[in-house]
Length: 208
Ligand SMILES: [Zn+2]
Image (cartoon, rainbow, N blue to C red; front, side, top):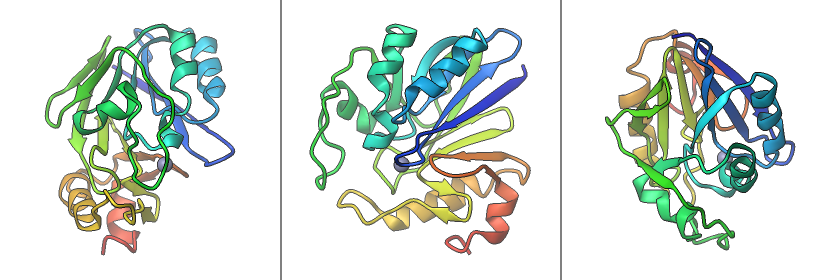
C-alpha cells in the first residue's frame, strides 16, 4: 500500500483538513473538517478518490465545521470520533463549557477506540488516545504518518486551558505514545506545518 497525503488549511483558523488516499485502490478518508471543506472536496474529486469515511482527531468547532458539506459531497459515509466526544457530533452537545454548542446533529457517527484499528476500505488506521487538549483527542497512524490533531504541533503542543483540558495528560500522552515512535515518522498536525517525531523529540520546548 502506498499512502498519499494532501493537506488543505482554512484561512480563518489555519485548521488542516487532510485527504489520505491509498494510491493503489484510491480508497480515501478525510481527516478533520475545517471551515473550507471545498478545498479537500475538490482535491478528492480531482484525484477520483473514493472517500470512505471522515475521521476526527477531536471535535473543537474548527475541526468539525465542514462536516455537513463533506457529507453532501461524499454521501452518508461514517464519521469516526473517539467515543468520549461522539455526542458532540451526533447530538450537538457542546465540547467546551466556554463556547455555545453548534448545530451538528449527524447520523452514522462511529467510535474510535484506542488499540482498535479503524478500517475504511483498504486503509487501516491505528488509533492512539492522546487526550488533554480535549478528552477524546486521538492520534491516527497509518504507514509513515501520524495525524496528531491539536495534541502535538511542530514546535508546540495544544492548549490545555479549557475546563475539560488536562495539561499533564496531554504531555504524558505525547511523551509515552508519540515520542516513543521512530524518528522518521511524519507528523501532520491540526494546525501548521508538518514535522517529524525525531525533530519534536529533540527540539519541542514543551516536551523537554
Ligand atoms: Zn484546532
